[in-house]
Amino acid sequence: MKFTEGMLRDDALKGKNILVTGGGTGLGRSMGEYFLSLGANLVITSRKLDVLEETAKEMMAIKGGKVIPVACDVREIAQVEAMWEKAKSELGQIHVVLNNAAGNFISPTERLSTNAFNTVLDIVLKGTSQVTLTAGKDWIAQKQPGNFLNIVTTYAWTGSGYVVPSAAAKAGVLALTRSLAVEWAKYGIRSNAIAPGPFPTEGAWSRLLPGDLVKKFDPARKVPVGRVGEHQELANLAAYLVSDFSAYVNGEVITIDGGEWLKGAGEFNNLDQIPQEMWDMMEASRGKKP
Ligand code: HXC
Ligand code: NAP
Image (cartoon, protein in one colour):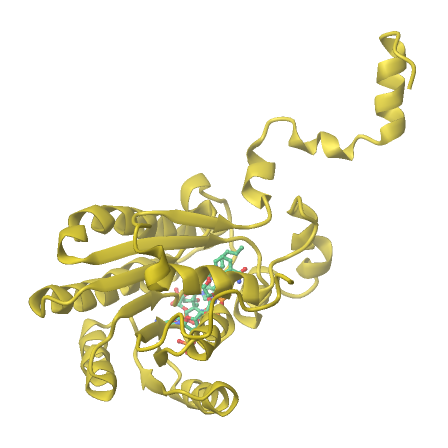
């Protein structure tokens, strides 16, 4: 068995209709593809209809099932409400919402224009809350259970320089997740989050490690297990959390980062840069033979 293989049984998501925001590219696409292979039908949504249509075609050719592409800018409530109605008209009911759409880029914060800061806040926090409220209000009105899975990052709780609007917005999404997990449990609605560490995607790498940065700041070097994530590992975790196997998991954020954020947090973790010979010398100096 390998971590690059699918983990759940083939019918784990049979009969589930799942909405994936940002589902045409990157991690949203990878998670969606796995959901499809476990028997789900999908609505994939983002701003670029041509990308969504191409992805939907490719997904169905490989995995079968139904993939409905719907264009929607999550910052615009009218578009979100229209997208939700279209999703329901195509698939009947939506059982799961995967809030995955995001915007991000690196910059010293003092260089950001107001519009730059707001753009990221609006996509990540306002976009997620608008999709969540639209789906949640409808589920409650229809007396229908539901399941939210929100993609955050590990700096949602540590914060991070140079991606400050993203950090502030993801922290908000994490608070939204935990708050609604409690408030809406009485309606049969669960909310959980995943905090991924570095998983290579075109969207993230082009904006967070542009040009030569990827050579200078190889993300794998910061990860205790010595590598970046494989999309299937994330897809396995996401599939579990959107499935009924996780029915008792609610209000949780699960980190999948190979230990990366803890390495940055632990006071003495950088002592892994000390070579064995130096440890030998230190032992010898306190009278112990290597
Ligand atoms: C500074 C920038 C900028 C940059 C844009 N802006 N890029 N400022 N540095 N690199 C400014 C613009 O000048 C403008 O401000 C404002 O932001 C809006 O820019 P637009 O291009 O008009 O916005 P829009 O077309 O809506 O595009 C949104 C975007 C873009 C966020 C700027 O990058 C995008 O579409 N991103 C979506 C995909 C994405 O970001 N994926 C990565 C997610 S990765 P002014 O003042 O000039 O009008 C992620 C991983 C985190 O979240 C964890 C990793 C480990
Ligand atoms: P990505 O491919 O760029 O995904 C972002 C998606 O969001 C795109 O499909 C984009 O599609 C969509 N989107 C952006 N703005 C939107 C808007 N206003 N309305 C609707 N959709 C919008 O990058 P990714 O790496 O797969 O990121 C996916 C998620 O994982 C994000 O939440 C990100 O924060 C999170 N994450 C990624 C990493 C990583 O290492 N890759 C690590 C931690 C967390 P359009 O351009 O068509 O709108």
